[in-house]
Image (cartoon, rainbow, N blue to C red; front, side):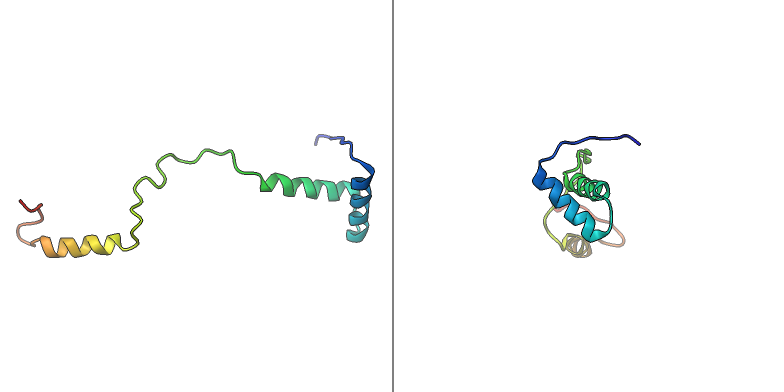
Length: 84
């Protein structure tokens, strides 16, 4: 574990002490909790996959539509082909 020393104005120190007293814990624990909350709220720097969302049509019923098109155009014996 590493140690970190920070400088804070008296108003912040007083506020931390009040919170620590109310929570029955130490100023150190209150400060750690506050810093952890701050870090968790920061946007992730993790890269996202570049392919995510590429094929989104925006149509929620696309799979049903595709089934309907195939049902109308496909023949069990001859298969499926584009209209000429």
